[in-house]
Length: 219
Image 1 (spheres, one colour):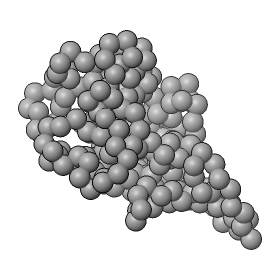
Image 2 (cartoon, rainbow, N blue to C red):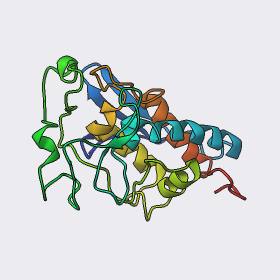
Image 3 (cartoon, rainbow, N blue to C red):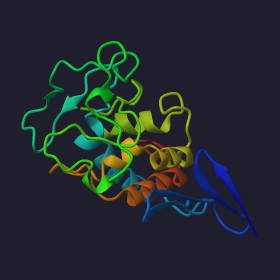
């Protein structure tokens, strides 16, 4: 027996005999499933392995360049940029994180809602997604941070937007800027693994108790 609900634009299937499964349409022919492992089925060691992959994603330029913490300056880094440096043109996202105080991020990162196969094919052009471009919240500080620092931030509701790992996975599914990291176009290097694999790792890490490197206990 199951019940279908609509929550935050997501189709949610609640099954009385199995774990909660969220299925989200990212594109016309692509779906990501959020299916947490059973409670107690993921060891701390397995959770730490999942975290190591999560860190590879979080610290990758496709993600870290816009997770600059208290700085309102996005970064340019990665294989095509050479030495890491702040975003050109004196871009400042301000306290609004969208550039409202100076020039809106969406001035160049324009919103596009059709022809997605060709939305980001031009080399060095500003990336575009079907939502307003923005710098990550100041609490989500990843650029230049260690695996331990990012892990502590991401598992703490005080610094992760008040989310548990299921809600982090849901956030990954409905935030289209995050989707772009795996399909950046323009000859950019995508984030490692896939969005589905990343979601799976987040969920496994949560079931394992969100362990972090150097924890003395299960976290």
